[in-house]
Image 1 (cartoon, rainbow, N blue to C red):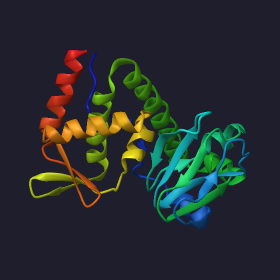
Image 2: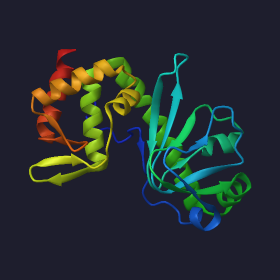
Image 3: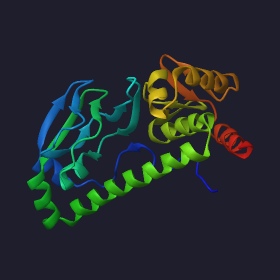
Image 4: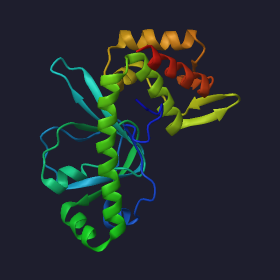
Length: 230
């Protein structure tokens, strides 16, 4: 099975060529870090465009364990499908940093869809990316082990947040081990074990709260080796 280490449809959402129409027709709102934007069961009157900052979508198990479903970056939208089809929210949406959102009401969206092709295409792009992202995540759970998933996470973060620093790639976003566990849907003990192994193999390191990938190609090669062993 062919599978790219860094999928085009990752669970980190940020879209290019967004329509400025969203900003011009919506209401700008500021949310502090850790603000809950929407909760399960909410019926939305509109949706949000991320102008600045970061939002995560997550759900909780009956035991209270959090699972992060996706990360919404600048220029992404969320809750658009709920608004279009009058579906109640099924998970939590929360800011992880101070964030500026643009809120657009349902009637505004419907009006824009009939008048602006760019808005329609942007909305379709968002919905399509989320659909394939979920399909790829299912494939990851079915066909790959947890260590492969950890490698894929670091490679995906490098693709989205990586900056070159000396001969290494710095992930320019602070992520805790609990955050990694919640994103991969594994317990913290497993996360600690795999991260320790990757550090011992000199594939990654951590300094001042930031992770570094020492050699992107070596990490890709190691991930390929893990796949071959399955």
